[in-house]
Length: 473
Ligand code: NAP
Image 1: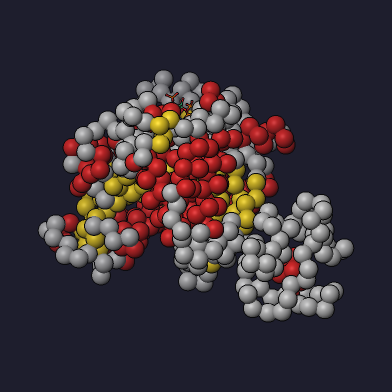
Image 2: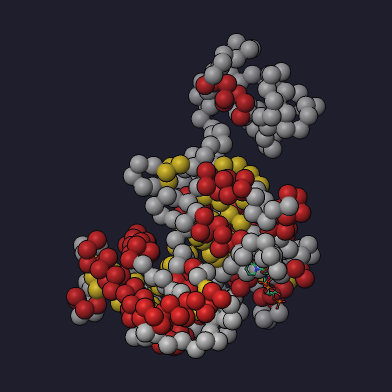
């Protein structure tokens, strides 16, 4: 630890969270570790670190520490995140089982980060039922601001208000922050009960377009004046004949959204040494939306990735060491992911196809309790990482459910931060835990000889199996 001595440790009797060193310090927390490590060397107090930048120490020494202080993640000029060693990260605990799976997840993320000399400064923000109860709003502006300003955040499941309020909090966050990729990696972990014979053959990363398609919410209800007006307009302008008792939805698919989605999928495939990107579409029927998505996907490969990726038709299916860009029609794709899962690697697809595919594939490798998700804008760096299941209210507060989905979403978050070694440690530890048949109720009921544990005990077992780590990795 370079620099001069630290001022003496604050008195142990100081009020929790209050600085005991300087009288004018208000609100800088002492931090939750003991002040001073086992070697007797002083540890940095956030306040002291701040001190080095501003005023001389009242005790005559100016402490300089290599250790971090909480800072915001920012976007660097080169389009990569700049992540401090102690980033401030907002989290939404989540409703229902959020009270169980969030603490379990946080404990594992913290333990893995610490093994690599990192620390996350968590900041709770509100959304969902908890926000409504405390503020009267389902998604307070302060929460959106926190996610916008801190770039990266994580959330548990949220109650969707019935009969009013916001349509879906998850959709709202995605739209407000323009999180255009829904990222769903789907792979099997040894020992996880599966309905298929060879779940180990599936290792797919789905890039689902997240902002348009029929999810744009452009719908009119059957029987309303709006529906009647739209039906008339479509008849007059295009000669389209639509039954008068129809509801109508609009499916926009743009060049902008399609290309940036495929671009992200290709960049991921190249960066992660993946073999192929499959464009999944329904272009044989929906030519100008789904079919166009496919065409624009190939264009991105040809125009922007020619040195590292190649379309099937441009190489006869022989890409050499480049990433192969191919396609599959959505309906047959849903068969082939079951019958020939090894043919799929990275998938890039439109919103609705991606929704179906994500759940169908997750079912093959253990289902909802362990499927992670992320919503990312790779241009701005914004990312919201989330459990893919709901609030399962009947289990709330019982310390019973599987924290795997939120935990693996946290792993995606660490990867997004570039903390890949800590992320890999968690995956290995999770795998070792399940291989030891230590599982929560959902897997226990399908696993012979399982040791059924509580949600928090599962997290403890994962932490026990984390490797020693390497500081700074
Ligand atoms: P759900 O909460 O996902 O629960 C359905 C079932 O899935 C549970 O009864 C349980 O099955 C299983 N399950 C869910 N999470 C699990 C976990 N962590 N570990 C093990 N099993 C798990 O779906 P829902 O009951 O339809 O929805 C409840 C609320 O959640 C609704 O308000 C809905 O709007 C909301 N929701 C939120 C999100 C989100 O925030 N991303 C997503 C979906 C739904 P068993 O009973 O068979 O064990």
